[in-house]
Image 1 (cartoon, rainbow, N blue to C red):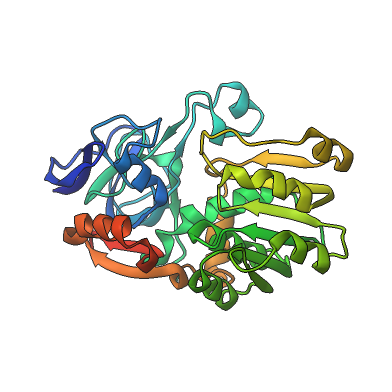
Image 2 (cartoon, rainbow, N blue to C red):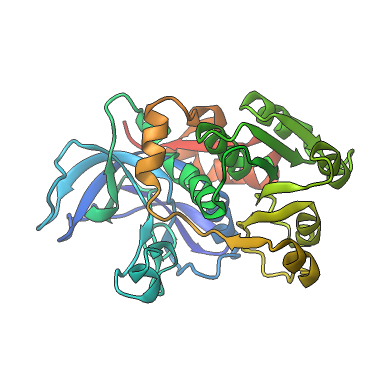
Amino acid sequence: MKAFQVSAPQDYRLVDTEVPDAAPGEVLVRVAFAGICGSDMHIIHGDNAFVRFPRITGHEFAGLVEAVGEGVQGLAIGDRVCIDPVISCGHCYPCRIGRPNVCTALEVIGVHRNGGFEERVNVPAGNVHRLPEHLGLDAAALVEPYSIAANVLGRMQPHPGDRLLILGAGVIGLTILQVARALGIEDVTVSDVIDARLATARELGATRTLNGAEQDVEAEVAALTGGEGMPLIADAACVPALLPQMLRMASPAGRIGLLGFNPTPSDLVQLEVIKKELTLVGSRLNNRKFPEVIELMASGRLDPLALVSHRLPFDDMPGAIEMIDHHPERARKVLIQIGA
């Protein structure tokens, strides 16, 4: 069977590999669709500290159960499924308090073990989620990025009537926008420096957009809120230098959700945090958010296919990587069709 393997930074290609048997406690999934994520690009560039090479990447995927391993219950051959990539031990402190997405022995499918950019892949049965019949496998392949959005919003604990500012209108910013609207947050401002991205944000329900290259975002937020500041700020731009501005723009008792893995230090003015009693929360992967996102998609409150800019066959995978690398302005979410 075919697989997309990254053997070392900048060393990637389609390879032939053996079809695995369904391992005990696991199911063999025939992959239908998989999405290319920024995290996959970081692996290719050698910027992911967690990956072990060689690696078949891909953590956003959906398909059909092809075989069921020993001891697996509740899943059958032919089931339409998507896969939560978060594998946790169940015993460490984070797992014991209900935070398995930061398990001390965390593994991520497509990072620590082989992922969905192959025709068939073994995955733990507990990570497999059956899909409603009317939810397409192409849409279901994008449950994972929406689970990132659901997770950060859950960490920020919105209150009724809260306003939300999203910094960055890339894929994650747009998923946060869609999930926020689906959860009833009515006033959502999105900031970016690329007009095309802001136009997409408006199409997907942003109340207003701000171009940070042309407008003073901090002044606009102050005017909009009468100087009070934003109760909720989601950092989907993941630029450490923006943290001081986020502290200033946050309202007293505000919550700031941070998503970036950038190791560059940020300036944190403790006075801003303390005088407003701000809450800064990190958000990594997702904490059992797949059922919530699947329900939102099935109900029509999320439109994942609106994010897709390209659908390409598996054979074009290397070319897709080259396009994202050299012409990122053309690509929003690139969806790869691997099987039928």
